[in-house]
Image (cartoon, rainbow, N blue to C red; front, top):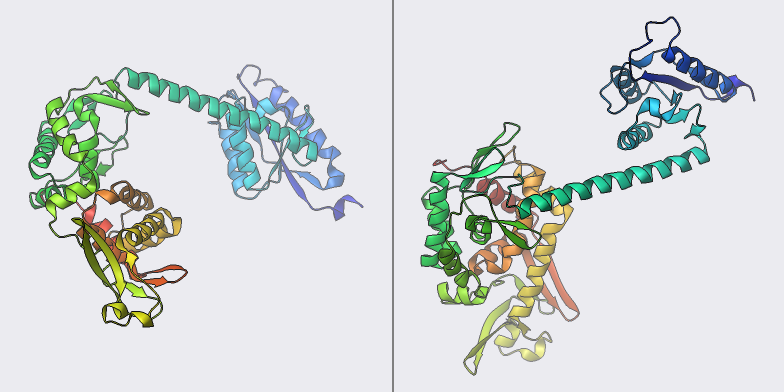
Length: 448
């Protein structure tokens, strides 16, 4: 088969020299590299290889980074689909960094570009070349993990010293010279949240009171200069404040707490009084503020046999209340006509709530909710929606029945009890309603 019958393979030569010494000579190191590469390309003419005559030279540039004009030109042409093979004299002419090499090879693969080192017989167009490449990339991965481990060790050592290691500053503090300093105005908000929770013993009532007063979360400017405006404090944010030991002057790292280098906002006595209440079971706290336990799935549960609603009922035994959902046929005296018996309310609600919480973690739920939320707030990001849905899970059991019932009715159209299981039908419009809630919760109040 002659060369004309082979597909045309466009080859680019890249050359580099660390210093500019000798570049003024008529025949310098870059010329020598190019000649060797041109000879190799010529030897592959029978495979259809042809030279791209653009020059990609970097004289006087280190291989320790990729900020080189010749390399940038080469990468631009690769992304433009103008090159099929990159040829160098030695691998270290392209880069001396294994991590940069892995990044470059990733770019080459993305655009179906092969790589050849003339003097080292490294050619990714051959099986042996690809094997060697995989070995090199394995070492690059090892180096990345080793670097990550060093960073994690540094963070751990810094936190043990009580240092602030960055991120969104907590309400009550600002950041100056990489240290947390007291924000007097926000400090009063944090102290108010702790004190009012001690008095109210209800996050729901506290949330309502904070909204009425126009109190919002942290407003700050990021390191990139972007403004982040505080939204009205919701239950999740209130719980985070009440659980954050940074207000005790401590720094958290992997389950351990260390004395921080910042000033405490809350004293130990106040913290203990708050957590005496927070530590109570959710059921105990709900009974303190809600006198009548709500049938959370009322109006949603249907009998799969008679297709009629199942009614919430309860019985008292030895002073203890037992709740059920019972088919309407049985309540009307027609128990023989329906084989679906009473269903324990707690078990049914637990199953349904578990499905809802699983739903919040699904990628398609995030995408649908985000798409709906953008209709109300075009600036809301997918990350914000994902985080908001994720935040619901850890405090679900802490929510009061009315709030749980509201979310359930927002998302669920019908629950059908069958002899062989439970069928939950979700509302398509529920995503829009949830998105509306999420959008509203991130809007800054007028007081902000």
